[in-house]
Length: 370
Image (cartoon, rainbow, N blue to C red; front, side, top):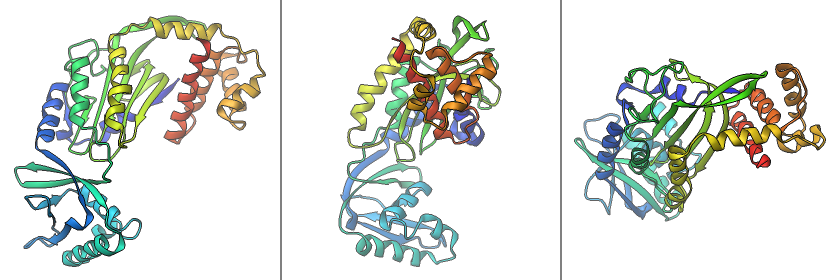
């Protein structure tokens, strides 16, 4: 068992205008951005960076294939700097220096024309009340999955995320009114993150901990960034409860599907993630319970040290075996014991990526019992 902090980090960092109290409001927000957006591929030579008159820190971008002057966002300016001169002139250098804006524009234009060769780039622009924003600068084969498409899929399967079976989780297992202060639905012009749970149809099974009856709720994350801030991912897990600051306690069996925004990303989203969401929305808890019971009955006949070392590494194997003996009062005997011990050990790993890797490996063990 472990804690999942992804929703907590979102809850801690999001501004009020990035918090939504139901999926329908998020859907409206993302659809407005999608309808006002235009994605195009053009030559790097088509871009020109110019200073803004009467603005000491303002820049604009012109593109020969665009009708309007583009105003870079904080995010797209960083992408433009990275594209123009990888590793040599990061956006932080220009933001932190007192270099005059005309000189910054000259540096970027020089890098676009002479530091790099001619190549195609993909840009995403969006019209708003203040003009046209340059929202992202990516490679020509960037496989953009629009946030609006992801939210549409969630609404189709889970409704508004408030009144149905799957909704924003309550506090300590109790249903509460959802406000911007306790929501788990977050979105900005850069990305989106959704955490929904089914806390009423809990999975009951015996001998969960130290021989005692226990239960799990089911939950999932979905996140995306159409401008390239992060990849598209969906994480599925079981858990005890969610506290007021959106930490997920007693999480188990975390499984994640992650899709990079490469050329085939839109098709992979439709083929891989969407069916899993549909199955998760409609499926019962019985397959999960059966998988756990199968893992409990599947004894490890191989050498335990070799079994653990093969899957978690030689250095980690002794710690996993030791923590199970400490917490359960007996040695590891079954696949379920290994899963419980590995996720318990993951709690002590500070690095998030490494911790999730351990948890995913532990979750995969359930398949060996099938």
